[in-house]
Length: 142
Image 1 (cartoon, rainbow, N blue to C red):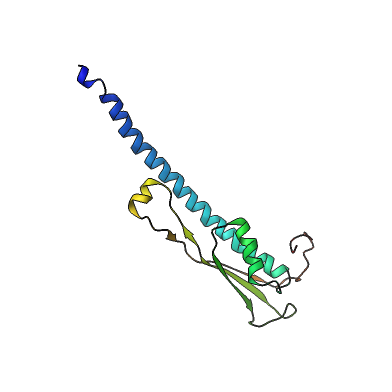
Image 2 (cartoon, helix red, strand yellow):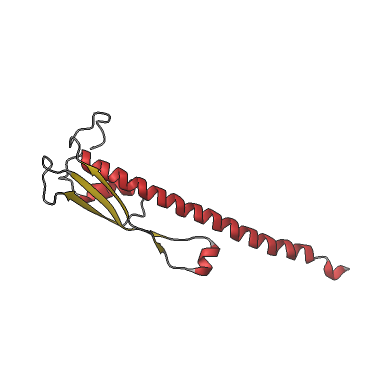
């Protein structure tokens, strides 16, 4: 019987590895869903900032605002409608996340694909408001 004394420990270790691998996979999938949701919110917030504030600050200020919510955002596209408009003639703005990759950290995903997953394009259009003024929040443009 002495040669079987470690069998339970080995079985527990193998079962624990499988359990933790799937648990980490679930956590990683949850992170991906959070990133997806945060990207949607970041495009909405970026479009809100662009449409309420004067558009002279340009793309970098909007990108900085969006990266405060989701630092993984590498690049955005900021398109005013119609093209070449001024703050008094713009009808709206479209903010699009052009580059966003999701990096898996769990061993399950690491065994399948080590490369980051390119997430879909996230885009939000908002019509023009009173640029430079927000009656509910005076600090949005600062």
